[in-house]
Image (cartoon, rainbow, N blue to C red; front, side, top):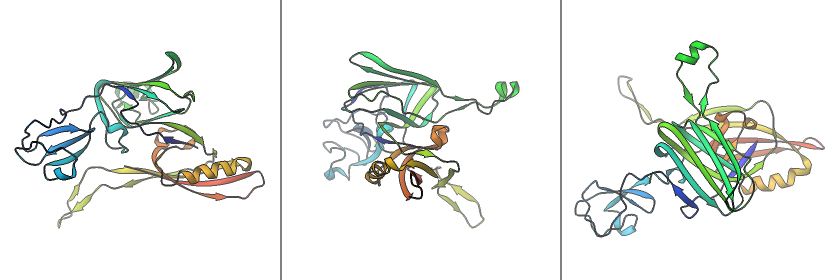
Length: 295
């Protein structure tokens, strides 16, 4: 099982981002009507009153004038939430100059993405390039299904083979036929937590609000759910102290967890990790993990 501890992505390392924000930047000299929308400090704000001028969105003195509507489109993919997407028409290109050494990239909650291309350069020399087709053809077993079945696209992706070199310029290109989107984009370093054993158990925690009236008719709100799984890995006792120290340091830290030894996209989860150690053998030990996804 592999763990990715994401680095903090800010506009200081984002060299280029082809996504476009839906609303203009806030202008202190403009008078805004009620319900007007602006972008300020990478977030969207909605005007709560008419004749709104000189009240800076996000300031404590302006809470009666502006309501925070969430991250801007350009930054939604690295705002810490999985269910807020950055979207673009046709192609989304993101270029980052990463000062620290990273060797992993993950994309979670993708939508409409047909191909992903990642290129890394160092001093203008290409040191990594990889492209993947995101069509999921696993259920196509005959010609009838090939021509007439509903096509599906993968929604998660994680690569852990980038060169571990500081100062990489990493270009990520997502392409599709129409609107493409990504809910969570992360870069980080990989920790190999051990050899995963058979018997992983996965479930979904559903936070969707469902209410029933007096006649039993259900009203179902926006679908919100997270992934959860439990698994066990085998580690060599010669690595035990190092792994335990790192796991302890990751308590209550959001991670990208790659379960099932990376064989299935549905086992890629952005969430929190807890563990217990079973020190039973002379040369090997077992670590049991519980993974709970974040919204």
